[in-house]
Image 1 (cartoon, rainbow, N blue to C red):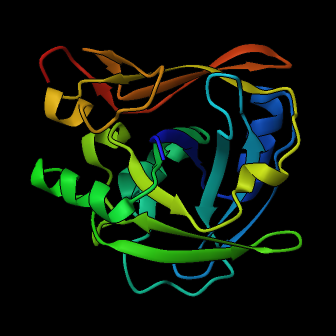
Image 2 (cartoon, rainbow, N blue to C red; image 1 turned 30 degrees about the horizontal axis):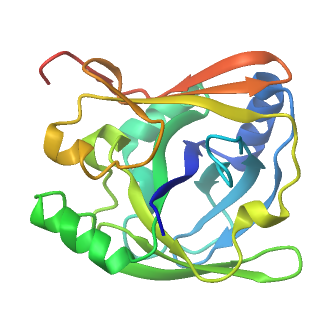
Image 3 (cartoon, rainbow, N blue to C red; image 1 turned 45 degrees about the vertical axis):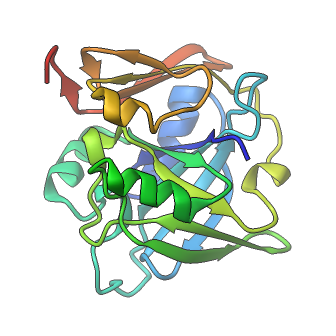
Length: 225
């Protein structure tokens, strides 16, 4: 399988805030997601697929207040006070996930480059009439590399979330990553992602019912660093 952009991750303090943000910012309501029991999180999802990025979707994720604490740091920096403080201003793009065909090989290559993505975890969540299953790399400290610009590898087992997502009129049109050194860029080998020297660590432009909307991470990378 050729590596591909799988989904964009937007973090929120709560799913209620995420749903309201999606309606206000993108002009549509997200579709149902589910719960990640092993991480104590839950999500809503929205197709952003386009001819450039088929099967791409937006994940709106938050800590699940009804779930027990997972006994480990949650993924995507969700337990970090700095992120939770930033989310007081509203949901924010924090990361992206790369779909691949051999996640173990991908993780070994990242580790050899000094970009340890963490061990591969088996995960699943219930969907409308089936169960989604996947494997994903998650660092033990829950941290994101390169301010979230270096993608997390994922490998799906069977069905993909986008298979059941309707077209809501939102499509990914452009994506940029800032400040990644050459060694890291080599592991972001998906088509049509642009690299820049400065600016938000990651930014994505969407065509929406409200017009073009650009989502950007909080982390800003200066030239040379």
